[in-house]
Amino acid sequence: MILVTSAAGNTGRVIVKQLVEAGLDVLATDINPKVKDLPGIKEAMVGDLTQLNFIDELMQKADQVVYIPPLFSAEEALIGKRMADKAVEHDVAHFVFVSVIHPILTTLLQHTAKRDVEEYLIYKGMSSDFSYTILQPMHYMHNFNPQAVAESGAYSIFYNIDTKVGYVATEDVAEVIASVLADPKKHNKATYELVGTQPYSPNDLVSIFNQLSGNKATATYMEVEAFLDMIHAEDLYFREGFKQLAYSYSTWGLDGNSNVLALLLGHQPTSFEEYVKAHLA
Image (tube, rainbow, N blue to C red):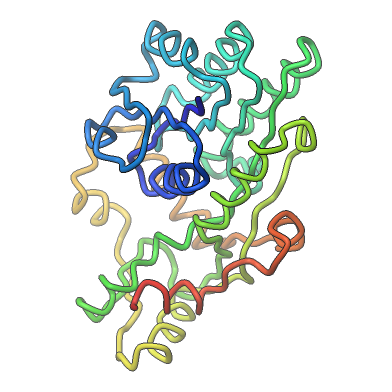
């Protein structure tokens, strides 16, 4: 059984779908009860990864683990380390950590937490021969919703609309995960950067969207505090993480190289144009 955490989220749902379509038994878990509604899964468990007993319950049923960390959790590093400890304790055959591109960037809270977990995995692998793979995805394309932009005529974003960020299709990440789980020995102790595209600014994204759709949408900047209020974000750590993200993206953007992803896929990564066409069809 393959355990997938944060399975009801945007990333988790796509990964679960890929694994189910590959004929694999999936144990999906999330704090969100909607995890029970994921099609094709073998089992769902609703619970909080900050609860130690719950992690034990999950690991007792898992042969392999796809660990997607909870979004902007102050306990993220502690959860990741505990997940690794329990995976070793329960003789999990392989552990896939869905981390983030460039976890060494200290201006981003969600990156530094994942850096700590990566370091822990490396030490754990050397001390106990723990089998793991670290995946470092770029900013996900699903953060740009073509249908929503088509309906509203605007892409509102909380960082500078002229700074450039690279992207990766969640489906490409899911395809890599399925390949890793199918041959864990080949990918043991590997760390892979998963970058799908060249960097694009929000203005660039909307320009491509308009060319493909015939719309006249615009990219608009929204103050991060206003964005957080709009989504009713009350958690202090969550808000601070988003503010750091907005500052870092506005100041430097985020980019990388797509060679590794192309090699792992055996074909070119999904382009932003392909993503938009697929989601407007």
